[in-house]
Amino acid sequence: MSHVLQCSSSVSLRHTKGIPGRCMSRPPRPRTIVNATNSSSDMQTKAIANVNGTSLIPETLEEMASDKDFQQTAERLRRHGQAAITREEKQKRQRSLDQIGVPSFGSMVKDKGGIAMNRQEAAVLQLNIGLYCNQACSHCHVESSPNRTEMMDRSTAEQCVRLMRAKAGSLTTVDITGGAPEMNSQFKFLVESAREQELEVIDRCNLTVLLEPGQENLAQYLADWQVHVVASMPCYSPTNVDQQRGHGVFDRSIKGLQALNAVGYGQPGSGLQLDLVYNPNGIFLAPAQSKLEGLYKEELQQHFGIVFNSLFCLNNMPIKRYVDYLQRRNKLEEYMQMLVEGFNVAAADGVMCRNTVNVGWDGRVFDCDFNQQLDMGIRKRGDGDGKGMTVFDLESLDELTGRSIAIDNHCFGCTAGSGSSCQGAVA
Image (cartoon, rainbow, N blue to C red):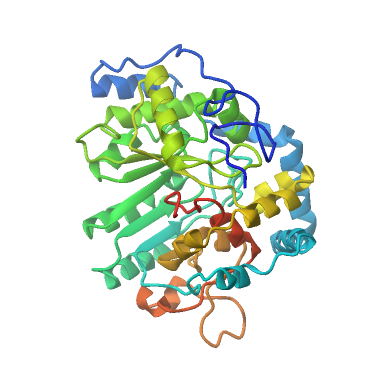
């Protein structure tokens, strides 16, 4: 099993060059960085003003138009459709596993003495409210971009709120994701409805959205409603972040973090939780969170005056854009072998799909966000048409308790090493 204690851009499966535990390219000393001694309001204003209210979207679209990988994927979508490509992905993963003689994921869990893959009582309601995003990241498992128009409507959002109320007492968290969920018209309705029920609300934020025109007050809004921000930050190096997430994303992400710090996020005693998410920019497993977190805190504090609470380390899932990335480099079989070799039965016992209900922008219900992207919905009992369950088929999330979880070969991505979930390591 390969772990790399750095946010490296190397594609080696077994090692990377450079100083262990450090980014391969250290960030330069800040140029136009907000002074940590300024007042909160001054910090937020300066951080946002540095981009002059310009949107990242035109730059993202320009990069998509010139990126060969994006263009190849777009052409395949036009020719074959999403359903056919999803089936092809599954077949490629399975061929890779067949080459190394690996049993099915379910058999692996059983053979290793793991707990049966059944749903427990729902504690987390995860809502993917749309695929529209101001970025188009190379690892994105939902294939979001400014070209995606799929967005949750009000009637679906209202039904999600009814399910929150029906589950009052045992549901603890509403986890809102996308795309850039803040750019969806239902975002604030869902935030406020959940917080009024005293549920924890997680906003999975790409940070650059905080600097989009019309979002100037977003940081303060999140603080006012005490939203837990989980922000994407795959490295503390400009080179590695921009390579994975797009040109200029690192600088905007830093300004976004400064804006969040300015309203209290990550500050001791504020009660405003700010967590960052790391995922490898290369073909290796995520390292131990406890080790990499200290490096992140040191680098971001020293160079940019940024503070945060925790770091979540996630493996890249072998689906969608990341499968394309691996396939074009003839690395899919090697990556799948690495996931299988790193299988951890304790991680399988703790996977998020056991107590999370995932809802897509169109109201369909899934065991997890990855299954959503692979169109592996939870089926209605006696479902003959195969369309799957929607939120409108449910009176309560309790109806899902005890049901079998839909699993397949991509699940090895969540059970390798320390495991991987939307809340980071699980073992």
